[in-house]
Image 1 (cartoon, rainbow, N blue to C red):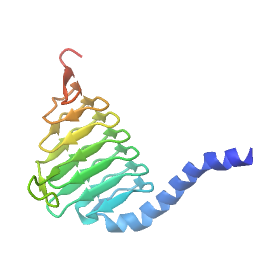
Image 2 (cartoon, rainbow, N blue to C red):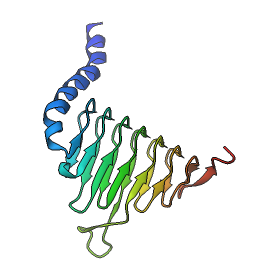
Image 3 (cartoon, rainbow, N blue to C red):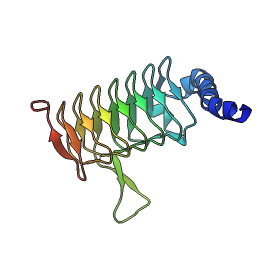
Image 4 (cartoon, helix red, strand yellow):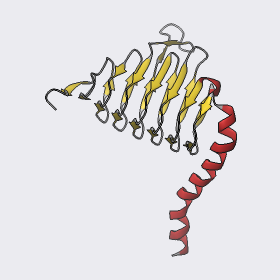
Length: 182
């Protein structure tokens, strides 16, 4: 009984500790760190002076947020970033407000050079519109714009733009329904 109670309380204790760290340390380290935002036990944070986080953003355990010297990340208000999400900006990554990015998603505007695997290069900027839902373990690659209210299916690999209101899925992702016939 005591063991179960302790184990069930650990996540909420981690959240409370993350709130304190977010209000003090993260608020000073990031380009912008919005009021009420929390990052819980990140795997890696890099290029913080090029990362802006809006108000009331929740970033869960194992997240990796990194902006390279030529890139930036902007995360809008009321966005949810699930466990083990990897956002890597070699170019610019813009995530508008009220976006839900579920567990295990990768968003990357870069790739490794084919001749020198230690070098990274931009593959284009990424823009996620408002109220976008990104399903578990989806991958969004550089040069992609996802319109407002779009849904990215679990496991999808998004290599080209997604119209507003569309639902996409598959590898590579293709439109399954659009706002006109949804």
